[in-house]
Length: 51
Image (cartoon, rainbow, N blue to C red; front, side, top):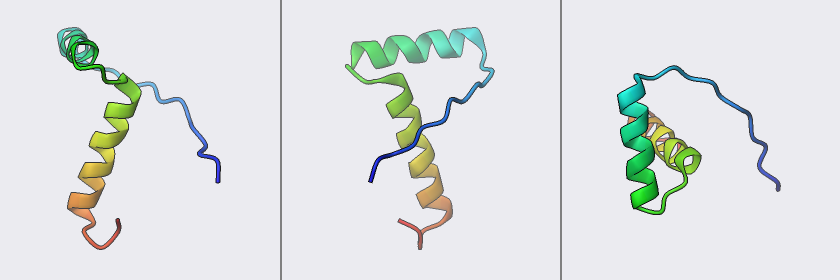
């Protein structure tokens, strides 16, 4: 099954975003993929029965 994607616009402090972009680049991580992983982890912590 194909994944469907939706664009998300968020507002973050500039320094935080700049630092996070640098972190992702330095570690060979795609920014969007990393944000998706962080969201999934939060959902699993809050909804331990849904995995």
